[in-house]
Length: 305
Ligand SMILES: [Ca+2]
Ligand SMILES: [Ca+2]
Image: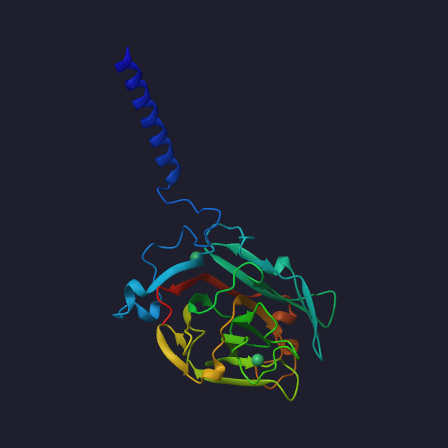
């Protein structure tokens, strides 16, 4: 009889263990995304920053801590805020709303269009991770298609969660307390802008350091990979795995949390971006322009340099 009970107990233990194992995988064989994990289960397990694929530093230095592959046709509200905002520019009104951001076909799309009932109102999608995810240091990488600038543009950037870009709190002569980090701002047909802005946006405190990266034909291919390596002692910007800008001035290194920002914008008359959306025939005739993001991934240094 005792043996029989032991056998029953053993069988009960086995069935619990099997059930637990079953919960650790599902029909796709992939591990579940736990409630706390910010890593997308669609991200390949061997994902690694493109720039460091062949580097001796590859392992064990970097660990994937956040990703979104944008593959499930649903915008992940745990990670992203889709903006409902309006901006008054000198010569037009720019609106962002939920209709201008859509996840489908393995990407998240940002749409640009004219509000056809209004002559001076344009729409462009924007979304960000403010209050949801904001790394300090790491390797941030995105693969995306940026719209060819023609009075509109696409940007991938970061902003401080705290007061680093507010005056007077953030005005300390450095970017250490937070700054606008522009990883890519699509501004020209064969080039794009990157760089930092710090100490707020007001004169005379505002400062910036950036570059116009020559990238002939950047809009001819569908996707490009933009990377940003952020360490306590340097910043490196990458295009398709190759370094395009490095900053080592310690005044320029932020040391606080920054959230991720994907944004579309429209501009009228301006002196920094190709075109004027008011003269863009495609948009004026009801066309919808698009940028789209295949993935974004953030890796953390196993030892923070
Ligand atoms: Ca500052
Ligand atoms: Ca994707």
